[in-house]
Amino acid sequence: MIKKYNNNSKIDTNALIKDIINQNPITTCLNLIFDDCVIRVCSNSNELIDKLTHYFSGFTGGNGTANIDITAIEGEFPSINPQFILKEPDPGKTKIKEEYINFPEHRIIRKHLTGMHFIFGGQDNIAIGPCIENDNQVINFINNRYIQWNLHQNSLLGHAAGVEWKGNGIALAGFSGMGKSSLALHLMNHGVTFISNDRLMIKSNGNRLEMYGVPKLPRVNPGTILNNPNLIPVMNDNERLKFSKLPLNELWELEHKYDVYIDRCFGKNKFQLRAPMKALFILNWKRKNIPTIVHQVDIQERKDLLKAFIKSPGLFYEESEQDLDISEESYINHLKLCSVFEITGGVNFELVANKCYEYLNTGNIK
Image (tube, rainbow, N blue to C red; front, side):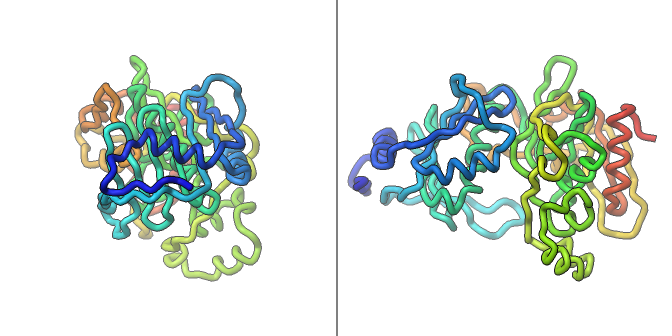
């Protein structure tokens, strides 16, 4: 039985991690390759590893030394009595999702609704709880460790999707609910390669900008699926019939989401994680029957648009010895190396997808 930690004992998080692993012996591991980063995920659950293998299909393999080691334990977290600190909801949100404790060598985060716990610091990355039931949270933890690793390589984090065509990449950002994932999937109909769904790291390499994606599947609402013929495999016939009867406004407001497996819908090798970033398109449109306008902007003069792209690393980020400069000026200095476009007016995914594809082919928009 795992020992209980109480207020009268000094909690040694190294001993806590050792106790957890000793009581839940590892039985299986999975190697993942995210661009040039190798991640080894080990677990006491074959079922969990099977789920992760399915989700990250296309990114599995490799036998080299891991850059990141992660342990995911299907089991019960030990009782510890120190008071967790509630993390305030993000702007526009109301639900409290996470609480945390900082220790000298580690941070422990507890998911408020599921009871999942995550311990990380230094080389330690532990997930413990009902992992099989909440494999999406384990997936997010794996991706967060990769994001941290990339940020420690002097990257900046952006809230954007990304696609690539013939060696040219573009990022797709937007204010909340603007549909950057939907636009990325419309572009996929042109044959482009998917780079990222919701998080994008950017890095300046001299006179050019590189973007690095995260292997998280797009999650889209029924409206996106019904308006994209390549997404037919995502929804069954009964669901398609039910959702097709809803009014358009109600359809787009639904919180119901589906994972889009890129290889099923668009073919093999259509999900990569790096490309030169040639442009950033920022969605700032409205669901109104008015013309859609795509126009180039100077990001130094339109700093208001940065809010759609800048993303804080968040609670799952561990500071490195080298401070991460997340100032507006740092983002502006990076984005000077690419073109920036704002999309205003009414929502028209097909028109903007065509404009983005035109830019990918010619480097210009007429």
